Image: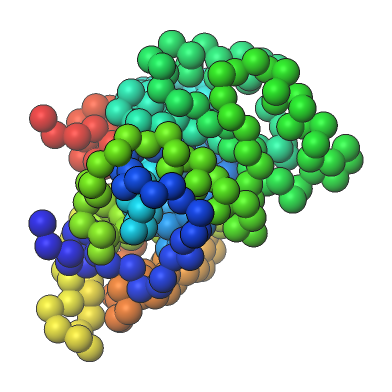
Length: 324
């Protein structure tokens, strides 16, 4: 498979790699799992050195399995950034939960990303225990305590001690994806648990996401950042046309629809005089242009699709259910 900008593509930045990795060449899959809004996407973006996953302060921003590829002379780590586990009844949310469980089953190493702020409740910890322990099958488990710079009232150490009391068969390491703190030690720890072997993908690639998929991620992120409340969770982005620029200086053309479940939500997304949808479109367009290094024409429409979260045909059209 070649490295093209509409398949896997080469990084434009040099990722800072630690010098302390073991001598053996090790490669494998690493599943980042956890509760919603625990910092998984921020962590994987920091590890890869490129933005490949949408981030926002709102839970459920990540909706699909995203692969970030960290390359090193010592080997290759393929990180699965997964949707957060939560208790919501819709078929769509159950589907996201199944994606995360499949990532655990497919991985060589499982990383439970635990937010230090806000800290999980005892009920949430017990839920993760019920999910993780039956699925590990003897695989190594690492607990990455994220947002290590955030705890203010009691500090970080008491919370790390509390995590130890949970009794999981895991090594615990504090990290900050936002400030890229302690990532070298985290990479060393993960590397030590991977099987020996050559890279699984071309060393030029840093993600399995296509530009088309990343465009959808960025548009969805802007919806979450603009609205934050109920509407983002009941919206979905469908990329209908994607015409990549054939030559330098030409324009990449993207046409998409934002699906919502009610007419009132359509009005909220469009905004007075179309102001909100223009802001969403402009912010997404600028990020896509930065990604591909060229001009982008982006057109977004908003349309009502009642019950799309319960409709298998619509979920397949949106790419959440793969074609068999």
